[in-house]
Every structure is written in C-alpha cells, then in structure tokens.
Length: 293
Image 1: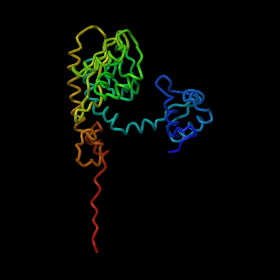
Image 2 (image 1 turned 60 degrees about the vertical axis):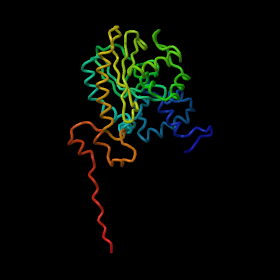
Image 3 (image 1 turned 90 degrees about the vertical axis):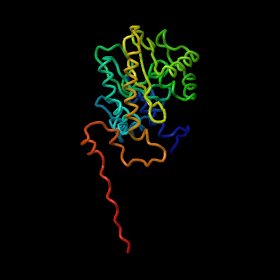
Image 4 (image 1 turned 180 degrees about the vertical axis):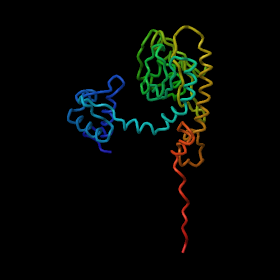
C-alpha cells in the first residue's frame, strides 16, 4: 500500500476524511474537512475528489459534502452488524412493545459501544444514543455489559483512554470500574442509574453466540424512577436468549470448526418472506459433465 512522506498510508488518509463526518456534522465544506483532518487543503481536495468519484462522498448544491450512499451499500452487506440487526429486530420489537421507551442493540467498537439499532417513542425519556452513534463503554449499561465480557487488554485500554463524567453517578475511576464489571459478570446484567442523564436509567444484558462469546448487548433506557429493574431484566433476558438462538443457527457465527463453509449466507441472515429469500439465493450450479476421450 502506498505511503506518504510522513509514513501514513493513502488509505488511512481517506479514512481520516470519512471520519471527519459524524451525527452532529453530517455536512462539511472542503475547508472544514481540512481543519478536521489537519491535512493540507490541496491534499484534502485530492482525497475528497477521489472519494466523490467512487461514491463514498457526495457533493451537495450548497458546496458541502456528505457521506455517500455507497457506504451504506457496503455496510449493508456485513453480517457482523446488519445480519445481527436483522436477526435481533423481532425480539427488539417485542421488548419495545412492552417498554415503550428506548430499546437498543449495541456492539463493541474500540473503547465505545456502537449502537446499530434503536426503537423509541416520541414521549420517551431523554437518551443520548442514535443509530450509528457511539458512547464510551464505562458510562452506559450496554457498554458495561460488553466491557465485562471483553478481554483484559480491552479493559486496560479503556482505563488508559479515560472517559467523561456526565453526572455525579458516572463511574469515576479504574477501581470503581473494575468492581462494577465484576458485579456485571456475576449478575448477568448491568443497571446504570443516571450515569449519562440524571432522569434516565439504562438496563442491559449480553447476547451470547456460539462457544459463549458475547456478540452484542441488548438494552433499554427508561425513566430513573427507583423502581426495581428485575422485571425489565427478565424481559431482556428472554429476548436475549431468542436472539442468541438465532445467532447460533445463522451463518457465520455458529459454524463449528471443520464444517464446510456454506455457499450462500443470505437465507439465515435476511429477514422476510421465504419466497423473497429464495429469490435472493442463487441456484446451485449444475455439475460439470465432462467426458474423457
């Protein structure tokens, strides 16, 4: 891969341009992209032009740029997030119909929890998360669930990076975090009362796939009214078990070692009518019939 004079790869520079965009800054001018990436304007102009040609950035009539729809197309093909989202959606809808607040699905991403699905109502309690948004692992119930089942290296990295304190209830330091993670592992769930917003409570449980690996966290954000969280934990645990079974039945999460790799993975991962999945699944290629002379 080509590298610049400073040793940074060309691909990494393109990624720096894409990372300049976020939920709060979906539209950026060329100058704003250069400021965010700390790249020379001439370099930024070249990188932006290349990304625009490939459909990864789009230019608006107002002379700003936004992330291109081709990125969504690529993301929609990954079973790691979108496949999980498809498999989990029916169970999320059941939880949401009971909770009528916020129901969300999060996965581990660096030192954050990345939310890949969220169902809400207009009258729900305040919640900082959005689909595609990130929250530091130590401040949310979903993050604590994911971190509790992550490797020691991830925990050390999170502690070294630090995290913001949003309220007086937010976990303060490494000792408190480690103690909370031990409790989450013992209880099988996490509850955060007022860690991000004083009036909001987070409750989350792990989603376990094959061989006991935690793939995601299923959580809700509800009013922080001092009521017992156990009924909600029970509801989430039942839903998590359903999602876990779906994960174990689906490719590629549950393929045991030595089992042949399936030719097509659409059928277990795509939701919808059976006839629709049949259309998406290519037919088997006919066996070759070669005769020897």
